[in-house]
Length: 588
Image (cartoon, rainbow, N blue to C red; front, side):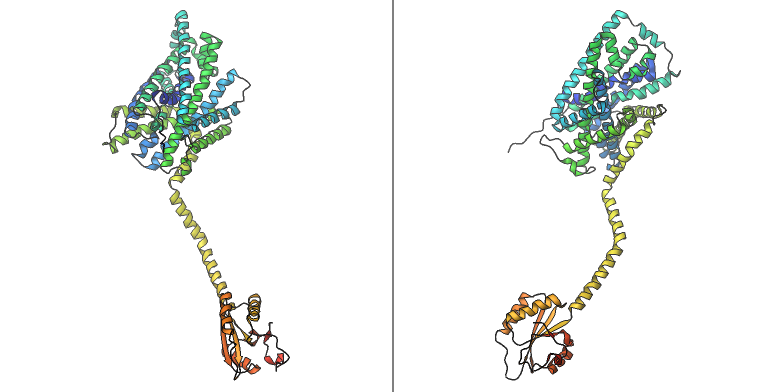
């Protein structure tokens, strides 16, 4: 029998899967940082790079000690309780859901610049479906697509950077100098850097993804993915912010028109239409790659949760390619439903995306602390210092508070309220799954409380009805035979079964002096007993001639009314009239 060996991901493939998510942040995070921090945006992005550097050690220590899928969920599961770990899992799931929907929708919007007739919602669903099917096909197939997107993205950014550098060498840095002296938005440099940092932390979304599919990676690959992602974010994001400040005025950069298409505007400004088209195509592809990251990451997370019996075991069913297709289908349906509910207005998901992602980062840091305290003897390839952990968690909490306090348009709900709208139903479902045996016991107790009195009443009624039936059937009947053959006796039995309620019958043969029992009659009685087992048949031979007096005597002796005694039709030689028999019934 041939054993199929699961092929694991190398450094490039693993980096590409999670790198597409984190590197796609360059499309929006530089503009977002400039919107809040102005000329200090590149500083906030470098601060983010420093925080991410600290998290490299944190993730390296936790996943090195516990190299299992699940990320923050796995870290807390092995250091606290399953219920606490489930909160991290719920936040991670919401982060992936928001990432998938936002990235797919933004990717289609970029493509819409090139194909204006393209329907946004239907195309977004189509893109989500494509990556769902690709993930069902297997992670190695997904990795090939991710690598292609990743390399194209880095190449596009390199081309854009080359054109910008060439442009600046010929036109100087006067705009950068002018922007540096531009008045800070709100008048406070500290506040500008604080809000800019909070917004810029969104640029590291995707850093947590590698930990969610670590089991799919070759040995030693995971820390390299962290290093590569850190390098990409540390170079590209601050550099693009500097380039933007060197090309356009701050008021122009802070306008709505530049927020979603900054890199396209930069490309068209320094290289013309074809560079803008290249960046638009690149944006579509790399944002699509972020969708793929969501599918791969959520599959690893939910597989682990299902193995831990938090999710129904139904989701463990594998396809021929080895993918958990039911998890992927469920996530696809969830993402499409969110897209339709929000009607493509992904700004409504910004709160979910922001708070979920930053909360997961903070929980991972807390998981590292618990790992040091509770699992100090567990071997690990690297260690994060206490100072770096506390600084990293503190920085994430600052960013989290900043995003919660961040102003939103008057007609839009706050980030926190939108987050709670999605988090509360999700965590309720997880709580139900975690406590399902307790809830089932409660349901069973409620059912017993409600229906036991009814059941007792039914049993009592049932008992009384059965007693009544038994009482009715206890009435005994008598048939006086003349030594009839088996055919006649069978007719007697059929009549009684059809017309009377009884389980007992006496078949009586009255013999006068000198008469004998027909030789076949006992054997025929035994046959009737086998043929009608539900009726107790008693064969009796009494002394005396059949007469009205004998009937009355036996009626009193057996306490059986005369009208429950039967005879066959008498012949012309019968010495008595029917009315003299006291009410005996003729049945044959």
